[in-house]
Image (cartoon, rainbow, N blue to C red; front, top):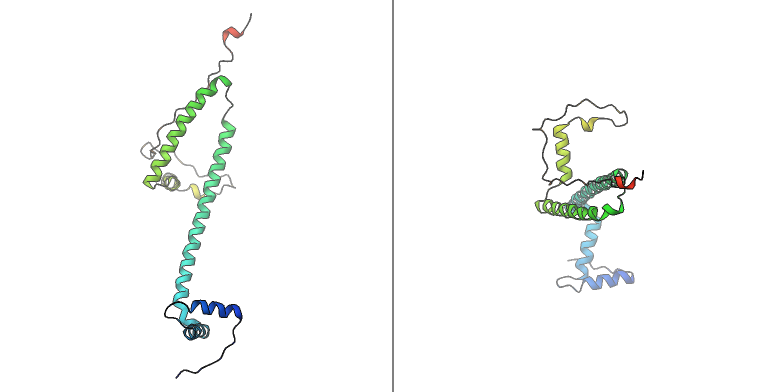
Length: 185
């Protein structure tokens, strides 16, 4: 025989208990009994707790990888933008139309390349890092603050891994500003 007890609950707790008891197969006595059992014997829930902890650990590691990858991507984009802006000279008005057409063509080739890589599920960053490790294994052991790098020989053509990027046509800027007819003698 189970002992009967009278318990006083706060209104909001009673409302939640009443709502939960509307589910089929549940009653107030069973819910309160299970809750008190878990409260008095927390070691019974170790299986659920350990599973939850494992999941949280996996999520945490995944978030750390995402954060690391995002930092690498942001740094790469920032360095590319700085490099691009420092080496790209402004174009004269007469060359801008052809440069825009060439830029559109190169951008379409770039977008197509990104699409191909995404469908193949390739990761360029991993490929580049693997190539660096294979061709220059001591590169990541160098302290950049000391400015001393071990001497490496140039890789042979067999060691160079070709990427599947199609070659981009270079932008040729012709300086027509100083033609012969502009000079008056």
